Image (cartoon, rainbow, N blue to C red):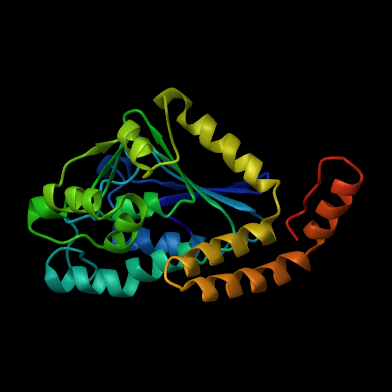
Length: 260
């Protein structure tokens, strides 16, 4: 598939997905959502996914200027876009069997905020910010925001973001636990890529099970979470990387994981 709204580059086992509508501050169109979804099906040579935005923004939210059947504006248009495109996309990201790093340059608003928070490691530049702007135009948060935010930062702060519709800057986001780290704008891409490179050399099978188990544990009871851990341990423990990790430990050397 030829992409017109994103760029996908895979090198050194890092898949870099760049939202590429800088003239629209990378506003999310249905086309962009579909292209991201397609890209997630073509990451076979990657062991980590890095998502960022081209230009001055990560993603300024849904493209409300779109028209026609693929519009995300209006109640019915938004419903179609969410149920047919954005919600399946967010679920695909949650189930991706590799770590995700998001590098937030500039605004991550609306659905762009949800996309940024889909990262296991959310790194924000100093000028980056997170915004639940829906209330400002009489809409409600979507893209999984009402599920994510209370779990990430608690009910009070989630309600603040949603009902007041004010920006949360990169430094505050890191303080709240919304972001993993806030760094200087000039260092953002290098820091994100260095972390992605580290993850790309790690035990990919174990990472996949960690992502799965964290997702399960957010909803499951204590016993169910432990059962999921046991199942994950069975899968990870049968991997070549687990064998290599055990040998490296006994031989007192650094493990050389292959992602298998």
